[in-house]
Image (cartoon, rainbow, N blue to C red; front, side, top):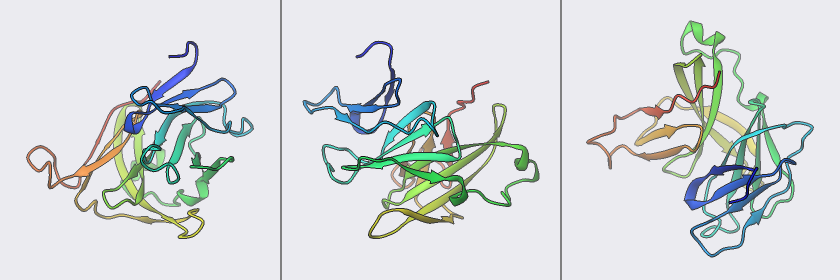
Length: 198
């Protein structure tokens, strides 16, 4: 592995390598496939990358995968689709609420954002509210995409996770079936890691 570069494990056996100029390369150490170089992120907006996530395996879906980068700016989520040369950005106005509505004290909380693909293939945004290392609550939204352009056009707040149960953390986030794991997972639950950094 390259020395002196930021490296994150991602999904489907891929690793993301980030250069100092914010150029990201996807590399699969388990398959004999060529690395996938991505365009650099715009340093005017982003100065640091914390995590890189793949929504699908580029080997199985070479024309239909999305790369999402969590950055130092929580109100701006960069993403790029297979074959595109420019990054798109989910901007704060699409997921910011005037009233958070979980508990009164949540208005003073920090917010951490996770993107999770549901069992039905929908893209969900999970918001974790925390103070210091204490999680106060979650909100989950289904992100609505335009059928043709696949651009984000809105969100719908979910009141139930259905058969999904989620695991969210700073490395990666996944959704699994409650029915399949009924002996060990509780329905309507989100399992998470305490990844707060002082």
